[in-house]
Image 1 (cartoon, helix red, strand yellow):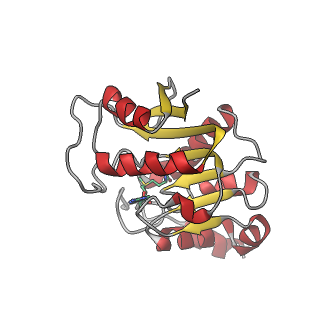
Image 2: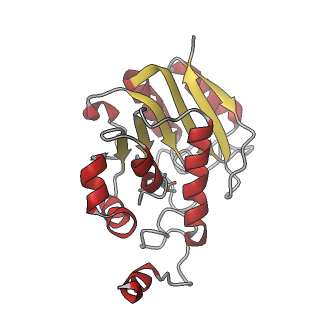
Amino acid sequence: MFDLFQKKQKLDPNLKAGDRHYRAFIGPPDKYDLVSAMQFNLLTKYGLREKHKLLDIGCGSLRGGRLFIIYLLENKYYGVEPEKWLVDDGIYHELGNQIIKRKKPKFLYTESFDFAAFNTHFDFALAQSIFTHASASQIHTCLENLSYVSNDNFKFLASFIEGDENYEGDEWVYPRCVTYQFEYLNDIVNTYGFVCHKLDEHHPNNHTWLLIEKKV
Ligand SMILES: C[S@@+](CC[C@H](N)C(=O)[O-])C[C@H]1O[C@@H](n2cnc3c(N)ncnc32)[C@H](O)[C@@H]1O
């Protein structure tokens, strides 16, 4: 049994970010554990408790989700992801069906940021390494749709790569990353009734974290 488990967990050392493996497609495979822990630590630091409803935008292979699903109460974790195979592999390799049955996370397989399809409102949202690949029009859609499904004390943590250039294309870029200026994202955020703070938080891939809240 132990040997079998070890075999399943063994990772090809040649895998690199973007390769079609659940631990590689979403980022550097050797940092999978670290980026899991960072997401969990950050959200709990900014107030996530087990009673809250969390929307994990672009949840991938549940790198963060594997910790959030266990921590949150039943029916509180919602993941959005266009690549269903990533969620399936994350469940198979990291969580198992017993946990899914017990915690009842919900998933939506879409690239249209159609959060209203969950038919609920959220206390927290997370976009870890989503604005690092998204076009400005996708970021607009994401924030507009969040404005319809967020509770009053809503907190949204989003990472991006700060640069001198703002990505001007219309397409999702992957696995390459795009950059934005803070002021540019701040203007988008403000358009949908939110305010934005740049956080002084370490990120293992040198992203910058934003805390986005409702304007009061
Ligand atoms: C760099 S990975 C990050 C995954 C996850 N947030 C994490 O940190 O573990 C980016 C993820 O966004 C997903 N994605 C691509 N287009 C998307 C869209 N339009 N809406 C939501 N997620 C998208 C990708 O399939 C991928 O799983």
